[in-house]
Length: 258
Image (cartoon, rainbow, N blue to C red; front, top):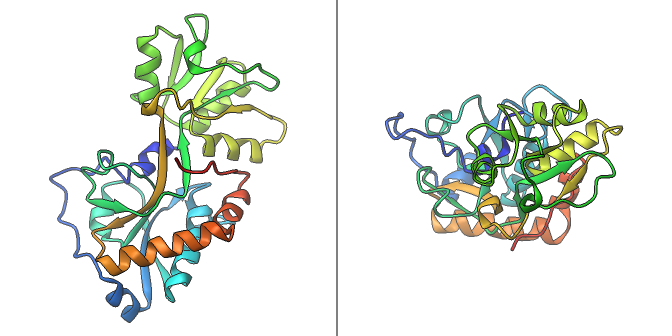
């Protein structure tokens, strides 16, 4: 599974020289067409999948958001981040609610509906160990080129680099590393799929703001009415517990935004 932070950044890898984006649609246009276009990764569970069942929490959340607007979802299935600009979708889900993170994507975002970041995942029964408590005797699985890798490298913590988060957790299960720095959603879903693993998942450390963030619905240059409609939909689905129930079906308990 590719690192969640790529998606949370609203596909921050978009290149400046990519094909120009399609024109954004207004709320009136969305309702007139009867569809809300949502960019969804083709094979990226637990987020979304075109072929697997269940299809992922982003697919379920997209459906419920669209229903709040009185329309249906038109999925734009993507494989690589660069396709977001070409697809011209109205929404992208699970994006970092931060202007700097979205600076290159052109996405604005809704009110946040959960808190995420980098969690330290440890073997079953491990005592609490903050990231700041790791040292050269540790061997932590990190994503290559990630902020966690940079921070732990500055502290001279022992590390092993990987390209995919599920590989990091497999390495932890196999005893190849002593901990893994992954997103809490990925870790929770891994425990959900591997009940025997029972990894200890420590929440992201709020002491380092580089490793924590709020998460929202990303919107590609919405008009004011569409932005307000998405905010209302998020508020409704959060307050009645719908969003929490969707993620819980994948073994995930959401932390409230800050």
